[in-house]
Image (cartoon, rainbow, N blue to C red; front, side):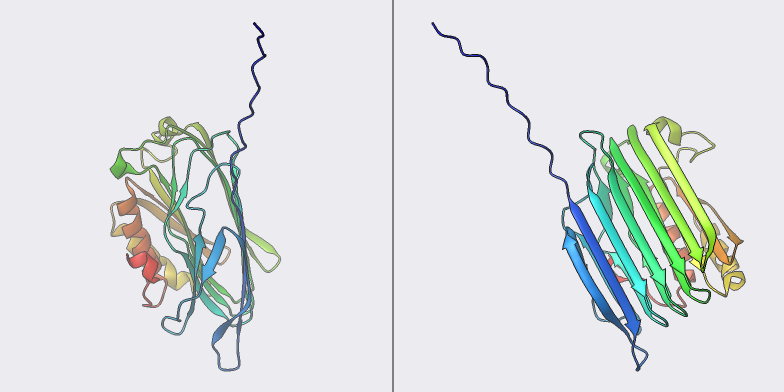
Amino acid sequence: MNFMPPRQFELPAAQRATGRLSLAFRRDATRRTRIERFYQEGCLKARLPRPVDGVCEAITINISGGIAGGDRLATEIALGPGAELCITTQAAERVYRALDGSAAEVRNQVMLGARARLDYLPQETILFDGFALNRGLDIELAEDSRFLGVESLIFGRQAMGEIVRFGRLRERISLRRGAELVLHDLSRLDGEIAQKLGGKALTAGNIAMASVIYAGPDVQEMLPLIREAMAAHECEAGASPFGGIIFGRILACNAATLRRCVVAVLKSCRDGRALPRSWQS
């Protein structure tokens, strides 16, 4: 009998999603904000619904269905002088388990010209057990521009009984006004996530958190409104002014409680304008 050596098979490499979105807006002679550059590549797409309250709105979409280890996503938003934009996401983003341990890379950059105004309002990012995420947000503001932004993280879907036991997070938020670096916030969390979140020095057991930034000439007037909105909800929250901005942090025991507090804070900063429709579903 002849015995053939066993054939060697290599497992196919996991598919990786890549996407790039580059949008630029300008203010025309009629004082309306219009799209000037619209570039989308790979899994990142954008839609521009009809303006609400006269403010241009953009919705970003990740058609890959979520973020997995090794994905590479980049978004650039530029506003010319006097332009006004509200940008949000179609739904909450999901970051799934990294099968081979490689981290997903997400880079977001916004640039505002003189007197421009941007409301940067992505919905929550939900982290699954075993995730690996490197995410950065770079904000460049003119001296007299306005910016309102939020970044929210949810560690597992509590209603589904999920617990994020292990994972790896690297998050950076950087804000420059003119040539001056005003904010450089770094977060690093890895290893036994569930155990570390239980520590009082971190989140004291809370599994939902958000960072809120407001920049504008009326910081002192906005600060008590933001603090009042935070105090009205059962969250651990605080906001501090420095360098012409307000930076706030919110911790909550679940996603629903966090969302209610974030919505109240955002509404207090939007001059009575309703939040984007995707936030109201």
